[in-house]
Amino acid sequence: MRTPRRADLAELPSRDAILRRWEELEWWSCAYCDRPFGEKVVAEVDHIRPLAKGGRDEWVNFNPACRECNRGKGDLDVDDWISMSAGQREAEGDLSITEGH
Ligand SMILES: [Zn+2]
Image 1 (cartoon, rainbow, N blue to C red):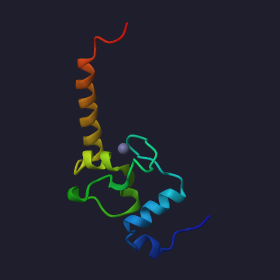
Image 2 (cartoon, helix red, strand yellow; image 1 turned 135 degrees about the horizontal axis):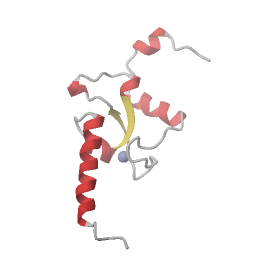
Image 3 (cartoon, rainbow, N blue to C red; image 1 turned 90 degrees about the vertical axis):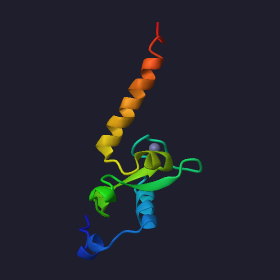
Image 4 (cartoon, helix red, strand yellow; image 1 turned 120 degrees about the vertical axis):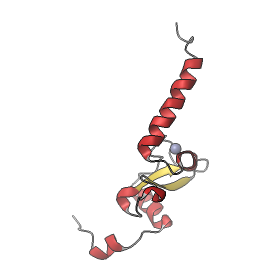
């Protein structure tokens, strides 16, 4: 087991380095919609807590996200965004509530 050197922690990982690390770890799908990254699904680095809201550039604050989810989330906190998109799903669900048996 390796302990990260202090320098590793202090160093700001570049976007490419972050994506490469995730690829190595085979954590290569969107953290939100679960789609595997590939030609159609563009991998991006999402800040769990947006920089605009005081989030920091550090590993614990990064999530792999596809471009769609990242754009959709924008400057929202993950929790806010999830409850917002859950609300949207419910609203859409209401329209098709006659479906079933
Ligand atoms: Zn996604």
